[in-house]
Amino acid sequence: MDVRLTAEQQQLRDAAAKLADDLGPGAVQDLADENRIARLDKQVETTGWRSLRSDGASGVEVAIVTEEFGRRLVDTPFLGPVLADDLARHVHTDARRTTVTVGGRVVDARGARRALFLSGTTVLATDLDDERIIADLTRAEAGAVGSPVTLGEVAADVAARWRALAMVTTTADLVGIARGANAVTVDYAKIREQYGKQIGSHQAVAHMLAESLALIEGSVSVLRHAAWAVDELAPGEAIQAAHVAKVYCARATRTVCETAVQVHGGIGNTWDCLIHLYLRRALTSTELWPATLKEIDFGLS
Image (cartoon, rainbow, N blue to C red; front, side, top):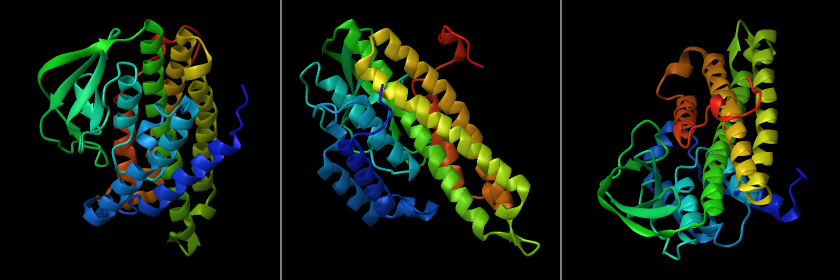
C-alpha cells in the first residue's frame, strides 16, 4: 500500500478543501444563512461528488472529500447520498434525491425523497416523512414511512464492501471533525490572553493541543489504510480494517473535541462557540455504523 495521494487525489482534496473553506459555516449563526446554503448546495451538485462511486472513484477518494467536508462542518447532504449512490448502482436504480438509513435513522435527509438500506444482501427503499434537526445541527434526519420496497439483491462481497465503505465514510467525517476542531482551537489559543499572555504560550495548554495533534496524525494513518482496503483487500479484511479505524478515530475525535471545549474555557460551553457543532457531529458520526472492540479479533486497547 502506498499511503501517498496521487496527483489527481491531491487535486480532489484541494478542490474539496476550497469549497469547504469558501462555503462551510464559519459561525453558528451561518447555519441559518439560506443564501449560503443555496450556493453550497448548487456548488456540490455541480461537482458531481455525490455520485463518486458511480463515476469509478475509490474508497480513498470518497474519504478525501468526506474528511474535508467534516473539517469545515459542511452542511449539505453528502455522506448519505454518496452511500446511496454506491448501493443504487448495483441494483440499477436512480440515486437522485436519495439517502440512506441505518438502524432506523435516516441521515442527510434534507431534500431526499427516499432512503435505501441493506438487509443482508437485499437492497430496500423506503419513503420519508418530514426532515428535522436533532443532535447534529449540520445534518437533517427523517423517519421512514410505509412499507419498504425491495429493489434487488447484491452479491455477499458487494454487501460487505458497502458496509466497509459506510464505516470508512463516517470515519473520514470523524477525522475531518478532529482536524477542524483542533484548528479552531489552536487559532483561539493564539489570540486569547490571560494575565497578559496568550493562553497558547502556557505549557499545559500547548501540551493538550500537541496531544490532540498526535491523535489526529494516528487517525489519518488508520483511516487511509481502511479507505484503501475497501477496494483492494478481501471483503472480510476490508470490514476488519474499517472496524479498527472506526473504533480508533471515534475515540480520538471525541478526545480532541473535548480538549477543544476545555481550551476554550467558559465560552466553550456556550451556544455561540463553534466547537459544540464539532462535538455534536462527532457523536452522531460515531453512532452511524458503530464499531466496538469486541468486533475486532486482535488486540486493541
